[in-house]
Length: 372
Image (tube, rainbow, N blue to C red; front, side, top):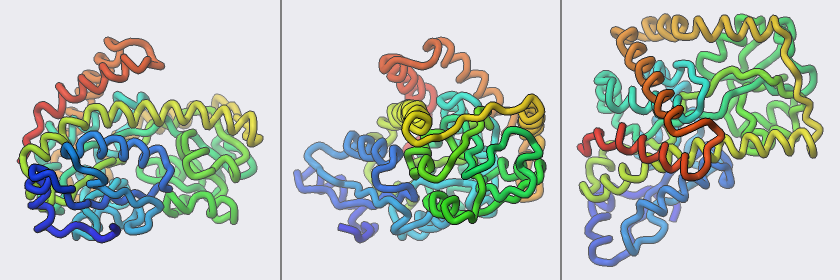
C-alpha cells in the first residue's frame, strides 16, 4: 500500500493492534536506494517496535521516490509522508538551530551520534521550539563514518589539487572546499553516481560505506586517506508531529524504547560496511588509496579547529540566538560520550560492546525524553 496514512487512521493504530487486527500502514521515506544499509537498519527497527501481531506497519520507500533528500523535511511537515530520514543541511532556513548542531565537528561515529542527539533532545529548548514550529519530531540523530575525498580521476593529495575541481559537498564541508579553491556542486545523494560518471562533479566528500551504498566504487578512481570528520547533519527518523501526538502512549514508548539499539545498530553497520566496501573497492574495483601530503593534512586540521567558529558565524547570520550556549552543551556531551566509549572499550567493538553502547544511549538519553 503506497498511500500515506490519514490522521484518523493514526489515531486508530493502538485500537486496531489491541483488537488483533493489522495496524494501518505508515510510510517512511528515504533518499537512499532500497537496499541501502540505512533502510535495512530501519526495517529491523520498525519490525522490532511493531505492535504484537501486526505486520508491515511501516512501509519504507527508498530512492527518493516519494520525497527527495532536498524536500524530505517539507514532506514530513505537510504529511506527504509520515516519517523520513532528513539531512538538516538541506533545510537550514527552516531549522537553523538543528542545522547548526548537525554541522558541529565529530570524529568518532558513536560519540558524535550520541552527543548530537543528546544536545538536540535534552539540552536545546530552541530545538524543541523549532520542532513545534515546523511540525515534526526529531527522534534520533546519527553520524556517518569519517568522510574522505573521492575523485573520478586525479586524486586530492595537496590543497592545490582542489583548485578548479567541482566537488559535491554538504554543510560546513562546502566551506572547506571553497577555502581550497574548489567549487561546490549541489546535487542529491542519489545523483552522485551519475554526476561523477558524466563529469558534472570531479569529486565527492563521503564515507567509504558509500562506495557500496550508491556504487561510487564504479566511478571513483581515488580515495584520499585523510579523515574530514563524521557527517552529523543526519536525522535518521523524523516523524510528523500530528501523527506522533495522535499515537497512544504505549506506541510512542515502543518507538522510543528501540532508539538506543537503533543508534547502536546504525553506527555499527556503517563502520562495518565502510571497512568491507573499502577493501572491495581496492581489491576488486581498482580504487587507489592516496596518502595526503603534510600540507593537506595541516590545512584540514586548521579548518577543523576553526569549524566551530564558522558554524557559529553562520548560525548568527541565520538569526540563531545564543549559539555559544548550545556549542558549550554539545562540547560537554562529546566529553561525556567519549568517556562512555572509553569505558566500553577500545574500538572496534564486539557485538556485546555495541549492545552496551545502545543500552547507555537508552538510559542516558531516551529515558529522559518526554512522551508528549
